[in-house]
Image 1 (cartoon, rainbow, N blue to C red):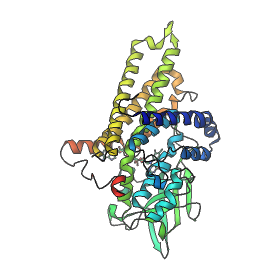
Image 2: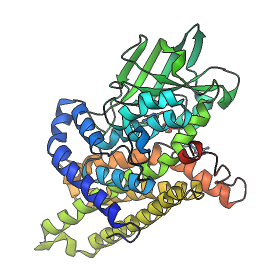
Image 3: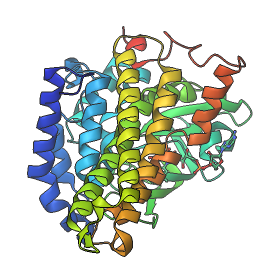
Image 4: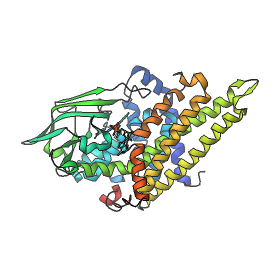
Length: 399
Ligand SMILES: Cc1cc2nc3c(=O)[nH]c(=O)nc-3n(C[C@H](O)[C@H](O)[C@H](O)COP(=O)(O)OP(=O)(O)OC[C@H]3O[C@@H](n4cnc5c(N)ncnc54)[C@H](O)[C@@H]3O)c2cc1C
């Protein structure tokens, strides 16, 4: 058993592995080949409770907390990271925005169905002008017109936006107010006109769960679907992204472990000069580096997740944990590919595309540089990373 976790959490880990091995791994390549969105599998994952760990039972969650959520993401990604591309939409950023920013009516109407995998979620903040400066780059505008808002503009990298039933979208309602001019809306693209999602061709990422450009042309959102008040949007989305760092770090750890496990197996199987390549010291050096960084990432992530579960300051340690886990995923993907030699570039072996996911976790949901800025500014005494503690977490808001 991992020293940082309990027997209960190890049972959750086993349950996730069994679910992935039984329901997802045997069929996911088929979904990828067909480019088919795995809606039925997402429903099953919702029924199994894989999206509900951080939500209370009153909205269909299991209330197990962030350490459990991190372990779930780790094991899902380790088994098939392509399928875990919708975890944010069903169990993290999308329902968390609604949970922290919504009215009781909105929460009850939308969160239980997202967590159960009945409706498909989405959260769209980024625009082409720059994800790391999301508020500054935002041009999409929501204009009030009687009982509705009409939203026009273009969102970038909106994952699952081509399939979503219920998402959260950020748009400006005041062009001159910076982050305070950003508002959040619950969007239902299948119900209202003006929404066009165009999947983006991405190197090495899923062909079934896609990220999109979204073109909005007077897209209609009823006023009752506004989250919070006008101008609350940026605050709401930051509250959702901050806890997501640790769970995204869990996905990066899962990718690192998948690379490591494949590399160990291959190093034992592949023989050159009459012996398994695992006997060569330079291959052993790679294996040792991977194992060491995986253990370090795991310790950091579980530590940060436990701090969140205990409502201790966690922003700084979460940034460190996410940064480390994304570096570990990159290192392990790189070393695994080298150990596989030319076969590491053949699509038949997943190490060929796991590298793209390692790159994604380095960039997405707060890039490595953005994490480094937060860590360094805290160390240098310029900005205390945990200055908002007690005012931003999912638990703080609904205590
Ligand atoms: C597959 C995929 C799925 C995604 N899904 C979603 C989604 O569902 N919803 C959503 O809203 N977004 C999504 N994103 C967007 C993602 O969050 C952004 O890509 C990320 O925030 C970085 O933004 P950017 O790509 O515009 O890079 P930029 O912000 O332009 O950054 C470019 C480079 O500059 C660096 N940088 C930025 N600021 C600084 C600084 N101050 N100092 C030094 N260096 C800096 C960055 O680290 C990076 O290396 C997704 C992206 C991808 C690739």
